[in-house]
Length: 216
Length: 222
Image 1 (cartoon, rainbow over the protein chains, first blue to last red):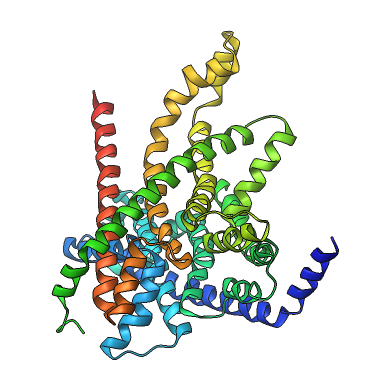
Image 2 (cartoon, chains in turn orange, cyan; image 1 turned 180 degrees about the horizontal axis):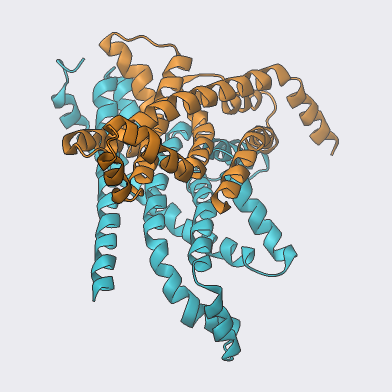
């Protein structure tokens, strides 16, 4: 028991590292939520478009990212983009990869929301003289957004958890901070329980929110 | 970047990628089978009236769903040896994947069972069926059908998640790509081949899911 408290004290001494890790995890998540949602809605509108070619191209694009692991995508941004002359630091690489994959998943959610709107409504809006943009803005999107919000929140939870893979390119996020601490405090279960509590405090409220929204 | 894309080196290292591909498939299959077993147990526990039985399952599912797989993997990878449990990395990896997916499978099974109208359970109970008879004869035959598509979805997630095992030095598809990237300084060729490997599995499973939907629609029509 004494040893347990000694180890806990050992972990506590690393609090600046943990705090920095939480900061990076939160920053990546927030960037991913904002950029991923924005880009995801644009892609989703394209995916649900009646222009077959546009819908196909967007579908193919999102499939490539939905079908490969986040880890591989982070590696691609970090190791391959420099070969094309785009040098990015690890934080920007992580933020870019995470925002992109979040956008790809959100695109599919938004597209299915849009497709769930009865086609008669769009026809009615068109015959009432609304332009295509007005139909989208006034009729389709307000209803689609209401439908997809619970899934969006669920997607944000996945984003927070997926952000842990940036530790593989050496970025000091919450997971990486545990990896640093475990080098000097050898009790891995204790160290990663602390890390887990950090993620739990971020993700559980979101999971709860998503469940409550689904019931409404 | 792609003007000097080297197909020859991919051809030379294709046997390594093939090994990685097979490893990813067999790791995922083993983990998926274990996850289904864990999911059935966790779901059965979470549906019991007794709080004492229900709580551990609910806590398990919530903790797993609110923390990243990588943290769970490191928890076992750095944690087990400290308590004197030594096992090969690949075992740790499969256990972590199975425990992680088990929580999601449990939720999938639960929502399948919940989709059966309450009245059917009551009707079968009032016609004198025991709990197991209700499950076996009324609930499960109907609940299995809506579970198939989400389970294929979980299999897709599982295959992609198995890439994290490369971080505890298990040789699978991602590791094979990394090896080519590091040993021969060819990140483009290595990671592209890895990505193609995953896409083959992804489109295969996606095709299975849509074939299943199509089959369902056909049988619903008759």
